[in-house]
View (cartoon, one colour):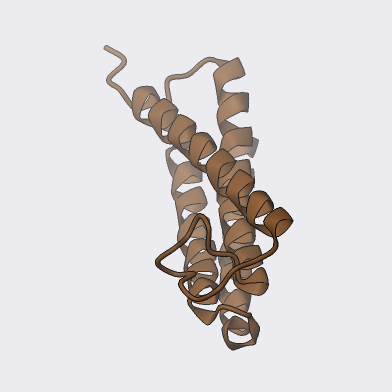
Length: 139
């Protein structure tokens, strides 16, 4: 079995576990609605990493692009969970006005969450674009 595919599946299961554990602390966060979002991000992104590991062998990509893809997948999925959890703990709302209504963090907290959300979005857009391209028909 390809070791990268195995790593993706193992890290996916770890992230799924972190998502489940996050569910235990939802009501202890400053913003429980964002706590629920962090729980769901962990579970959904963990599942996504497992799926990425399952399709890894089917991707027609160069070794260099595979390495970039692996790093982007890990960054995007784990930072998605972590940034959302931090937002729940700090009660930030600038980038999440629907879930964060009535809450606000310090300027620095809002900027950290904004950086996390923007950077993970770029990482995930890159990842999915490359994966769709990599799953194209080779012939």
